[in-house]
Image 1 (cartoon, rainbow, N blue to C red):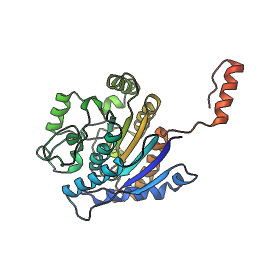
Image 2 (image 1 turned 60 degrees about the horizontal axis):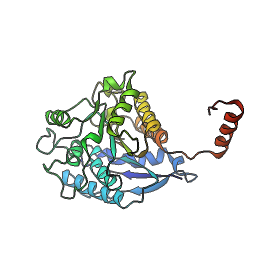
Image 3 (image 1 turned 90 degrees about the vertical axis):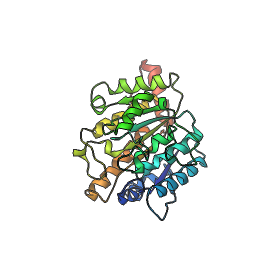
Image 4 (image 1 turned 90 degrees about the horizontal axis):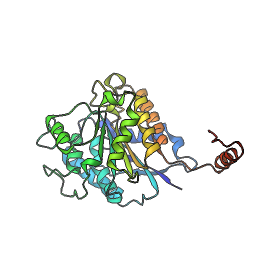
Length: 306
């Protein structure tokens, strides 16, 4: 049976809003039922530096990478709640130790592929993918595992700096715009890109979801809102399509900030985040339902829907 693991990452040094560090604990409080009946195993929190800035973000990412690297996660589903998106440097670096060919579906308003030299803001949460794909500009010394650009799929990205646009074009990184994502052909587009990446369908998938992928009019509890985004139904459709077609080994949800907007909205986002995790979390087959389905198929020669 696949284990479901939860890890909280109180990460905020990748950007200026400290409230993102509060989201993992709020998620626990709102979703207490997750940890009943042994449905989920709570792995606790990852070490947080006592200082701030980019160096703290890099130290925290290293601690997260080492934590994941030392986990026994084969035959497990790892769910991570942050924290700002700078933590993905540690998340993916650790996951690539276990799954060197990992496919990453990046659902976000931003490409997060800047470098210290190219970034207008200098915020580390806009840099993890450039370092993971091999950039040496300001890269942490401990980066060993690299993400293949052809194994990265962007969905919903609409706010890109010049360097990021150039990188996506030169590396030919797969890309689904918000307009395409909100259109009728989303399912087909996702399947087309994934099939090109992995015709066999055997490579595991990690979903990295930044809540600012949602349109700015529909969310306040996040720090870098951008107009022209996708809606919740679209995000759910993405998760469902991925679950139906691929093996999802891990999911990361980031940038919920209880200090911005109304606390009621942050709590609602945490509840919804749990629903997203349940969409892609491997479920144990109910033996009774399986037996009933087989009986129906034998007697009536048709599959039975449950």
